[in-house]
Image (cartoon, rainbow, N blue to C red; front, side, top):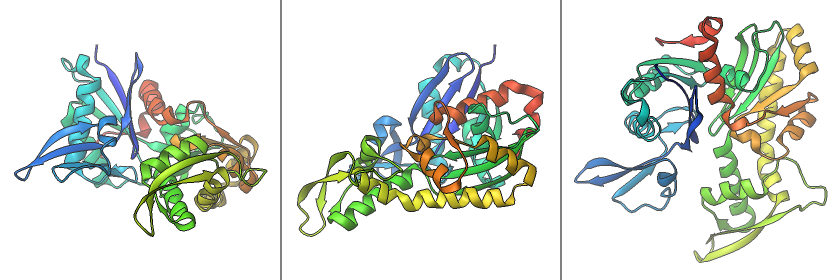
Length: 338
């Protein structure tokens, strides 16, 4: 029996879902190479490679081959995807699996072909492409096949995709370059500006998970955590206490940009579908939807109820699998030859 694998090839994380076993791989989209005599050899991938970011000697190069949801470095992406296949799919290698991959809304044919060819080169027998907003909506359990408007806000690592869906198709959609990676950068920039401390992005990501919030604390401070970095003035190691208020201030401009994208899309939505969305609300998916209070922040800004999906990080991967399993009912939403 041929196995069916769905892949969420994200800027921050890559997730493999098997039709029988569920999530079989969830690792950072990072690859590291050892460079000797001008030649690059695969050194590490996933979690092991992520630990090397910002800490490598000249002989090792660690990179993220995807940027804003699309492949920026084809060769590195192909090596990474191939390594993930070997890591997760050894038991399938006797018979190549059928693979469906999500792609960002608005990706060009060149970008889609790059994703398709990378997955084929890694070991897939057949490859289908599903647009990310559709996959996210399916994975969140939205009734996308019904004659009813549904809006999904998928906050990934590199982009946020906002879409209105009805009758199995995307009515209108928009992608903005705001995501979890930008949250980390915003926190880093805030700390540098306000505390004269240079902090690595990985430290800011950890801080985001510890005390990250999209809403301002009632007491003007909230919880706190300590970060360590390099003093911007004297270059010496230094530590600094950062509060929830600090993080909320750092992230507020980005939350407002997501709000602007939502309002812009609602303005382009047919009245009957907009009425449905005002009644049923926004569905938030993606790893960025795990930011505490982001549903309340967007609800307050838009005046539309917002709900975080169950398991938001895996909505796209599971939704891609659902699209595969729906067969002919979703065939119109699958691209095989971009």
